[in-house]
Length: 383
Image (cartoon, rainbow, N blue to C red):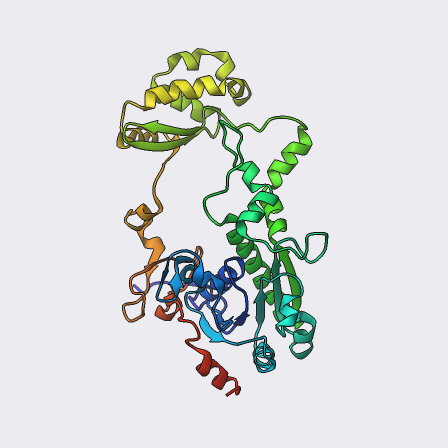
């Protein structure tokens, strides 16, 4: 019996697209990485000293964890855009690009020879992506910005404040940077679709401040709907609970799940209490409910509770270290390893969520500074 042909192919989604990535740090380069993982060719322009992400944290052979995570698979080209010949080479490369990506303060890219209006005059199909901290207008437009300063100014630290003390806290990953990269990549691909339809390029401007606001939309709406009200969980009991050999997070999706939790834990009195039959009735008693649940959970290990909660369809998650993702049967396939022939073999790189095509080995290799300068410049007749 012949099998039915699969209706979809596995060609990379952005095959044939060229991205000129002149950004540095995290937000811009990670956007470029996403486009590379979707199949685009990404030419990364670096100054003679390299993208400053090569100096963020512990360094080995000219790379850091951040520079690898944000630039794998790109072609590194060193240009000194302070010199006329460097700016001229950048402008010449932009003539062949589908996307130009930068994340400098307003005005900096223009001084590098990458003014969006000037580049679009020579390449009207160009999608030009500008990422900044505060945007191109307003009293703070010219200020420098990093993930941490934007987490503070954009409200994320307040959202992540310590529940006991109210002290604002930095989120432990570069959320403002990474989320900005995701929005930028989505905007770039949407603009490429417009180019295919109309032949006209686009200048896209995103700020990290915009992204912080967008991430917190429901919190801002809640504040407008209920002025002055303290933030509260959506249901109870919910939260982080220690068990005999670790920690897990429990969340009550609805009243039916709460009833299943009561039966699982043997809390028959909760089942009989009319005040606890709805989320609205439980929320005022959230502290009491969580305290009793915490005491009960302490006496058994994770495996015991996981087995019970799975059987009774209760939302939970054990708290794990990121390294544990590499060996877990559920998540091990989420990673690929850099090939043996590169300078950094065996490094784990997460697969692109939603990726439909197989990743070629070169897409996993982090470039050495200037590794592709001569080859790329010769390819475009600049040597």
